[in-house]
Length: 169
Image (cartoon, rainbow, N blue to C red; front, side, top):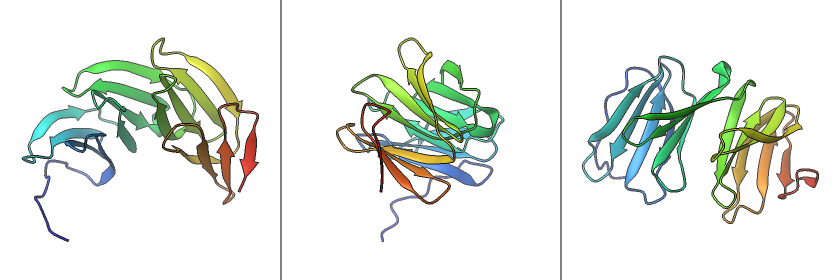
């Protein structure tokens, strides 16, 4: 493995990193709530955000123009522009373990410990929820037609667009 360069600037342990879809930027978060957006052509910081609360998961939107930061124990999701400006704070009101964007529906899906939630990125409101015990992580397939869910029992479930159609693997 060749070391291109080292990105330094966080004060606590790195909790999450994510590439933009064009692989030109990376976003990272740390245990103290620090978020940094990096330019991968030169390793420079494009934006630095201090939330002052643990950010355990962070991702670029599919467009690469926004990021979503999850403060799971605080039960909130923070949506930022890539310049560091706060766009909105979503009060999910449940412990958030993971999340995924769905650009085909312009929605964000939250995997909370005891509930699966779907929010509109346009209205910034919850539009659907499904009780779900032990939900730990979620991931869409490449065309967003299936969502895999990992739970605390060691099972993986596949969901199709209709939440009632669940298959256990």
